[in-house]
Image 1: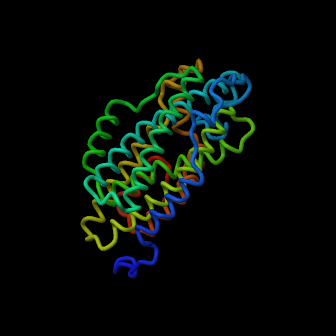
Image 2: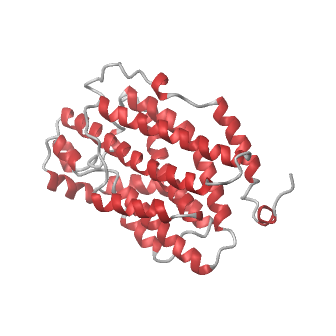
Image 3: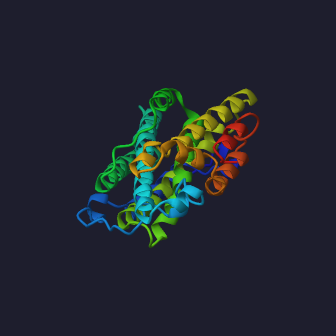
Length: 304
């Protein structure tokens, strides 16, 4: 297959159909059905965290040290359920953006077929996250109403590099977290296995999103790049700031105002978020999609 002029100019941009074929082959070799792979009938241990404790918003604060072990367990179960709820919210946005991008395209192409495979994966992931929270007895956490409404606008209007970089933001950060959770024997078995499923399948999605981001951003004007940087940063800010619903603190029997204050000023948590964001920030910088005022938005949620 002859490579396009775009691909020859930028060696990071591979042939779209070759990538689609490889990702489809990978999907055929290594995909999971959570309804089969996860033991949904297994009891929930009382002495294991919902997520790696170091990823709790309160870990390292005076309040964390004052909490009983049972409160720490309860808090982390609700925190992981909140993160999964935010994941469901954004996966539904992702699905709509990908389907809109593929609308009336050539269905015989591997690129098109992998895009729909990704949508099918995301549907399974959302059900998997929902059942995990249900298993813990946690509510269905969703972002606050203002964020939900902004998400409606984003999924309806975002296109090109903004849509695919926005997808990458949510996937990259959760990927780093879940790589820790799936290996941590202190974490609930159901979270470890669902994290493994998500990490394996999202690796394909992230490659797809990276390449599409580069492809769509290539050759764009300075004005469009500036606008794209701002839109991607706004999306990232909303996603990261919405991961933990304030109601998780009351669920653990904590003073919500104090918990929010200590979580906001938690330097340990801020360092963890910066660490998890480094691969994404490097990619956006390399793609010339990081700079100017957008940096302030990333710093506000400790991604830089």
